[in-house]
Image (cartoon, rainbow, N blue to C red; front, top):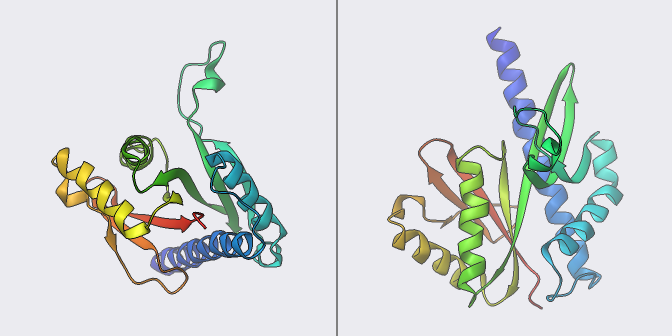
Length: 201
């Protein structure tokens, strides 16, 4: 049983890495081809990235399926309009190892260096949605539309400090696939990963 558990954990770790690679390659090609604009809505950018993930030959090689605005089913009473109450997450990537399905999620939020409301939204509907387990296994994407990543993260951390949540600061970490990679620690979920994708130019 321990061997199966070890194999399953290795598969899940490799799967997560592939998900990160697919999203980062989609971001890089969208920049190279100037396919997005800094005045786009969050869902516009997500749609463009999703299209590029789907077109990436590695996705089919790795047998990964993806969809956007995926509902995250919850155990709620079934009455008229119940499906409208499902939380929706921006990206859902899935793969199978034998009979086990692996899922990984990305929730995206627009950010601007000088926009406190967007930074507050990043916390309240991004970070807090993972902490509350509204969103399962996954991480946050920050679409930076104006300003610098490090200054934007400082602003997020200042808001967390105001909320007396210093232990949850976003801390930059080394990551081979992308320079603007951060992690935050949270008591009930452990480490939450953050990728800041700069669309400001």
